Image (cartoon, rainbow, N blue to C red; front, side, top):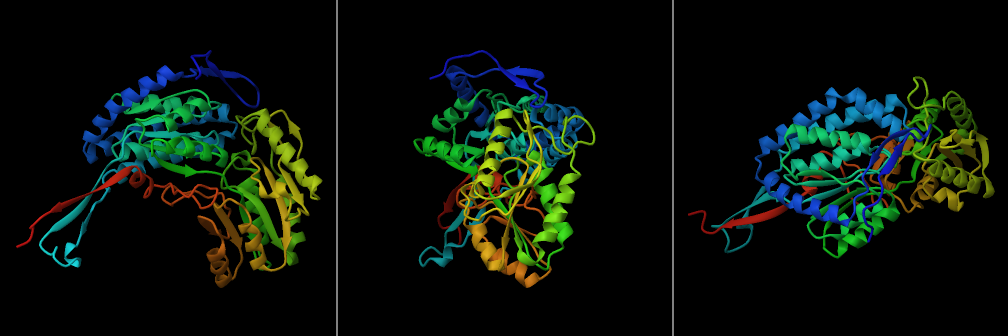
Amino acid sequence: MPTRTAPLPVRNPGTGELLGEIEDFGPERVTAALAAAAQGQRAMAALPAHARARLLLTVAELIEAESDDLARLLAAENGKPFFQTVEEVRAAVRIFRGFAGEATRLFGRQIPLDAVPGLEKHLAVTVREPIGPVAALVPFNYPVELYAHKAAAALAAGNAVLVHPPARCPLAVLRIGELVERAGAPEGAHQMLTGGVYISQELASRPGVAAVSLTGSTTAGREIARRAADTLKKVHLELGGNDALIVCDDADIEAAANAVVLGRLARGNGQICCAVKRVYVQDGVHDTFVDALLAGAAKLSVGDQLVDGNDVGPLISEEAAERVESAVAALVADGARKAAGGGRRGAFYDPAVLVGVPEDSPAFADEIFGPVAPVARFTDPLDAVRLANSSPYGLQAAVFTRDIQRAFTLAGRLEVGGVVINGSTALRAENLPFGGPKDTGGSAEGLHDTALEFTRQKTIIVMEAFG
């Protein structure tokens, strides 16, 4: 079991500049946080819905007031271009406001007992109650937005929340934690536990946590689920994706190419679970599509994420860029041809386009977490669906076609949680359910789903309620 260690540095992944340090929590700090969460849970559960809603609205106002500073801090520590982190902080504001509304809409039900012979005179209702302290395990790629999805949902449902921010880019999330405290959250109801993977593992393992919510890799999800099983915690997992974009021969080719440029190469530096990770193009339009994709990729500017005009910044670490470099090398070794990009300088990786990718390449089946667009051919759209479904992941997919019947036919056969017609897979709106089957985890996160996930249902029966 780890003991207290030296503070962990937080650096700009592009320049190496030291931005701050965080404490690496040891087991005694985790134990103290769990004890405080038990007290905070009682206080949150006692708050009426309108008070929980007001708390979340106040947090949203405080985040909005500091949005530019938070976005700049997030860009510096995370590597995404500043204009993208501005959008992320705005999303967090909307999410807190959205869950403020959900706090007042945790509806129960009246169940007609006269459906059962002999129970006609009785009344049954259900109520929603807080599930208990929730562990929010936040990833590095969209930490502020995904923190908001988890923490705001837990608070809306009347729970305490224990947040584990990503060790490489925790500073913006930690600052928002200070704003939650300023907004008036009860003591112990919202806590930040900083450090390495040990923190997430302990929160999943320890009694005193009722639910654990993770956005991360499938490997991490399996480990968290195993640890949570011993205490029968509720586990909410949004894991990996290897999202396919299918371009049919009647598609708007410029729009499809742009969807890959913006939905893979230039958003989040390619580090998005729902980014376009595989591109399947029908034979008749393949060459035209590749030309358009290469033209769009050539316009992207790679550089300092804090400098206006740059579309792609550094990946979260040099190690992450090395993994992308190795994955591209594996695709080339399997027969793909690098048509553009692919150079690495430290944590920076030039957006790469690969063509002639063999469908049976093991590297094509894996999730590449960086700005890489591998393109493969198909002849029949149903064969493209088969190829898309061959992935162990099931997050999102996209279909480009002008034929609405074809669009719905293919969408119905794709084994994913969401299908985008004539748009990029890299679409997440906070009011839509987001998640998918298979190795993606099977959970759904969104305004109308997550708060309910963090409640339990209780049935109350009144005997002889009716004359």
